[in-house]
Amino acid sequence: MRLKAIKLAGFKSFVDPTYIPFPSNLSCIVGPNGCGKSNTIDAVRWVMGESSAKNLRGESMTDVIFNGSNARKPVGQCTVELIFDNTDGKLRGEYASFTEISIQRKVTRDAQNTYYLNGTKCRRKDITDIFLGTGLGPRSYAIIEQGMISRLIESKPEELRIFIEEAAGISKYKERRRDTENR
Ligand code: ATP
Ligand code: MG
Image (tube, rainbow, N blue to C red; front, side):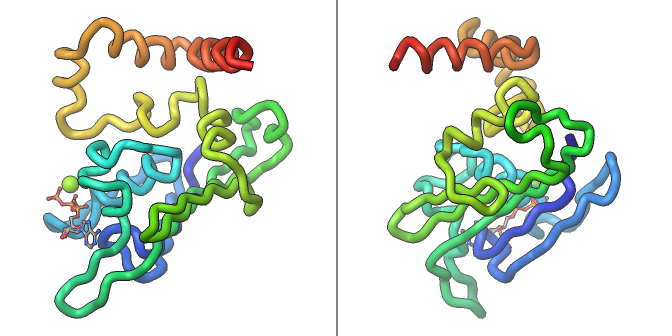
């Protein structure tokens, strides 16, 4: 499974619809300070269901919406879509037969969030579920950002355990058990 492209509109500094393709297994985003490199990573984490504004470097969850600049007025909503290549069938279950998987999240100023899976409206949980145990997800080890290594070193045993369980592929079973117990 590989991230093929990111589509953004109204997200942070990406006010106009922007398409960022990742044509190979190794891509590098380079650019001057403030050009939006970290914003693209925030976009990836956000669409996968991140629910902490702090983790997205904001104060409220609607801070991800373009809030205006000298030349442009703020906008009312933002959307981010991730397109994954699943030709290796890494995403199993009901999605195994899809060679391409698209996940999308939209938020409006009144904090209404909508999620889509291959164009169909779904719950946040449907998105987080398909990435459980793959190493991807809003707080997975697939995204190692500035300061995270020291946070890991300094984290409490319980916090560290979450990362180890995800890496070992057992978090999805724990999640399913929790689900069953809550029914
Ligand atoms: P550096 O090299 O310094 O890490 P960067 O390329 O990672 O820079 P980002 O942090 O991605 O830069 O982008 C910062 C820019 O995004 C700032 O100019 C900031 O004003 C802008 N920005 C962040 N949130 C919003 C928003 N909601 N609306 C408009 N612009 C925003
Ligand atoms: Mg940055």
